[in-house]
Length: 383
Image 1 (tube, rainbow, N blue to C red):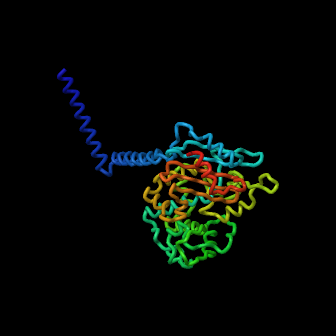
Image 2: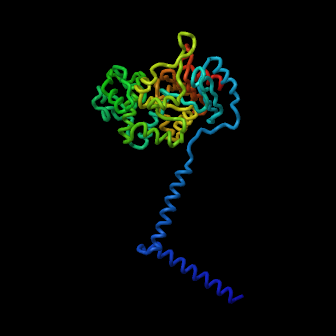
Image 3: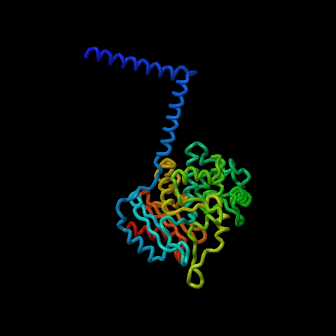
């Protein structure tokens, strides 16, 4: 037994010495074959670890409630009573508690709207553009107090206008004509630069899309990326949003719900001139989304995942402002509302950003404003 133990431990010691020797040779004798194998293994291992982390990085999604929303029937009843169609998502206590749809995406005999139906989101894109500006601010690429003249010195009174005022639609800027249809954002941006006028007075709210067209241009200048690529990289791709994008041509538009409006005959008719509307709004007003993708995008931003919560608060709660970073703030929270032809978006979220209603629609009956639609549903969902 004693001889066996001596033999066993002798072999162990030899193996250890040999192993340590090989390790030292591999690591420190840089011209050896062993070192090349060592370097190759650990470099590949490190790369694989990094790639693995990227692949397994959690993609943000709004948490889903385990139980059906207690007021689901009331939401459906509110939609029916007001003849509202489209796709609705309800957030309760920070969780997606209900998604419902009503009406048709292709009227009168086409498919029905559903949870993946895609709509132009119109002014709901403002928050995405504004959050992109705040992201660049957070990363030291721009300052909200910087003057417009830093980016567009040729614009009248640009030395008096700040990026913050563009965000809040208090720049005093407007355009003198209707933009020409184009599929090129640089062309549209150039058109806005040439046709923008300034009142010379800042501080008063006036919703003018030129503010956010210029912000999209500033995002390009500050980031070094085209606006669409920046949004795609930091939002659409990062969140793996499968039912979102930019409507750039007829093939993409055909994938969306067709927008409708009331006709003189009493029925519905497809909204005319959508191609031109979408082309003249190219850039910061051309995104389409499903209601789930829109909800995910908003709560990703509002929960402090894209930018810090401090910057979220600064963006959406500017004191005494009618419009702040893409939203309309109030004592009870904030709303978002907009329209693009027959498409309308309407959102209402509470101050704690825990409860909310998102509505995307391709038809709103005559007599109901887009400022009313989400509140109608919200009041029933949270009464």
